[in-house]
Amino acid sequence: MTRLTTCADAETVAVRACEEIARLLARAQEERGIAHLALSGGGTPKRTYELLAGEPQRLRQAEVWFADERCVPPHDEESNYRLAAETLLEPAAIAPERVHRMRGELAPEEGARLYAEELAGRLGAPQAGPPTLDVIVLGIGPDGHVASLFPDAPTLEAGDESLCLGVRDSPKPPRERITLSLAVLRAAHRCVLLGTGESKSAALRAMLGEPSRHVPASLLRRERLTVIVDDAAMPERAPAQSS
Image (cartoon, rainbow, N blue to C red; front, side, top):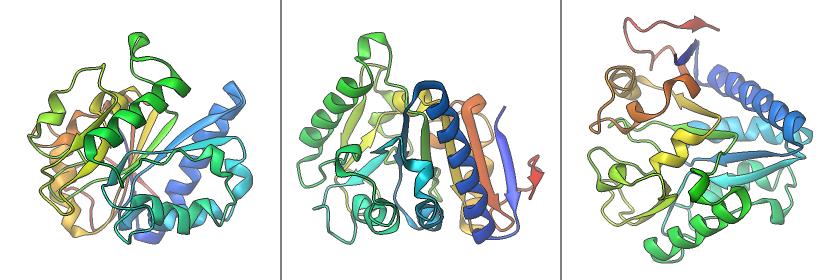
């Protein structure tokens, strides 16, 4: 069952998300001595990262990964890595060796291949099933996409052996990207999906409906999914916990 929480506004979403992510990281660190956190780009998670950076002790035993990346250099204004570096990685002084950056400056397929190798090398080979990240932070697009998995895209058909995929035909710029596969998103202990603003309401409603390749977010494992939204994004007639 999806955990769906509604908050009064975007700032409260960020506060609640920060608390939830910190709780999940603490549990992973207590159980295994380490936690693996994957970040997404976009405007919605930005404030959450800023709040997390204010409590760097919560990230002391965390390794940081990425859910997707645009195929641009790391300091390009479109780079997900740049957003994370400016809002979280640098303010929290996370050691570079604990940050696993997708190499967006490479061609999509090469960047995806190298990242898959890094994931498998650090978290386990695909023969044993997809690597298991502890927490993946996701936004949702108005079309229902998550990471860089877009509606009806061939990447949604990749098998469990595919960990990371190159994208050359993104419907929103830049067209070339690198993304974790659906199998890796579904294997995570918990995905925390954030949605703010009226423009996300229809996508969230569709996500909570029947699973469909037309709405990639609907294909996430619901029993491992936490959704935190503001009132403006809250789908009508959806069950929620008030915050």
